[in-house]
Image (cartoon, rainbow, N blue to C red):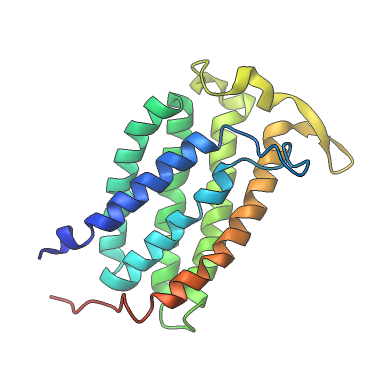
Length: 205
């Protein structure tokens, strides 16, 4: 079986995760009073870092980048249909930047303790992804990207109480999403650790 065929399950998983996240990020988490701090997308997106890191561990950084690029292309096309062009642009830009950074950090730390590479690469990648995505998707300065769809009639730009003052709703959502992404990223260390013995580095041809 060729290397490309070997990574097809990782590509499919990456595309599915990003498409789901692009759609779910449009909907606040309306439970426990967290609707101003959290979207549903925060629960699914960190799994993309798990897929990336497992690909990197098994097949190396070149294969991981291939998964990122192919998953990105599929996800952006489907996201335009499921969400909006602006969401797709924002997600695609943030995804490429964050995932490629994750690949680089993971590869440099792979020789450390087993949890260092996935933990640090996921935290840094999540931070970059959150800043880029929410800024491009919802900040008024990037409204030129807006097509009028998927932004809940502009409600994400409404001011809400934030750290003793006021800020656009998307800013508080970004902070809430980042916190959940970090928590979910930490939780992803469990399946990563469980799969270490299964997805050992493949012999280099």
